[in-house]
Image (tube, rainbow, N blue to C red; front, side, top):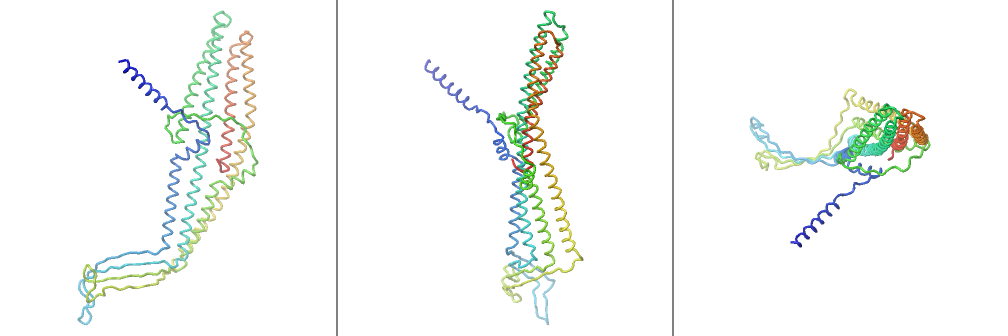
Length: 431
């Protein structure tokens, strides 16, 4: 019996140890690891990759148009009667015909080459769309990351506010018990405390929502725990505008996309011009005929024959259709050039705005930090003055509210600077 109990205890210990070991500690994310996981899991990126696969298949289709085509044809024809010439049958009333065809295009007015070049540019376009989605995804991850940290900091501020107001309520209650302050002081402190507790609840819910948003972007379970590495440095580097502008015009996928579109327009112009030329092809046909399903010949049909042809087809008049098609494509190319000019101006403005936002955020950091220090000192002085009964509860509560606002402003300026740097990185086409 004793041995049995010992075995049971030992077995239970093994199970308990195994279950504890199975509880893995939540993964701690850095910005880099969060972006990598989002890129690996993103549904939108996977969709863009499928578009790239589609473009590759389209290119392979265009390449196959250069190669010869083989086809088979089997047919049956029935006449109302056999054809005669001078009383002699020259064709049967029933004919079975089998044709094997080989066709090789020789010249298409450069149409095939233009179509193939267009298909290759389609791959480049899909790759740029993929890169564009990757950049946007990285910015969304950074924004979600900073929002989680900001929400956590908001909880910390709210908890400190609740703690300070609880102290104020206790002090006012003590003073009221000995008749030093009216009940009104206690009530005012309790109202502010209740409001602060509500603010703490909202802050906690904001943090939960921020984590859910972060998990969604990384394609994780919406309720998965989120642990992030805190940012240690809040003084991002601010570079020169011209340098950043050059980087943006060099790196931005949007610029590369419009350049690809212009190249596509060039190929579409060449494709339209190909209609000015004749199309030349070589055709070889192997023919079998007969009056039975076996197509093995008959008195009126050769058993087999072949023919080789070089054909040229030239549509030389379509009432201006070809020239107007060419002009349409040329107009579209000029439109793209104007769109590119507008895009360059917009990117330049975007970079300038990102730099100004970053400069503003960085300049606000020391100011808000100083305001926190002043707010803490102001609260300390008002607490001492209230305890000495040389100031009112309103002065104390106002000092507490000012400190809370200063802390919120300081935290906001820190994460605004981090987000401004992320926005600037997106503006210059990096992450």
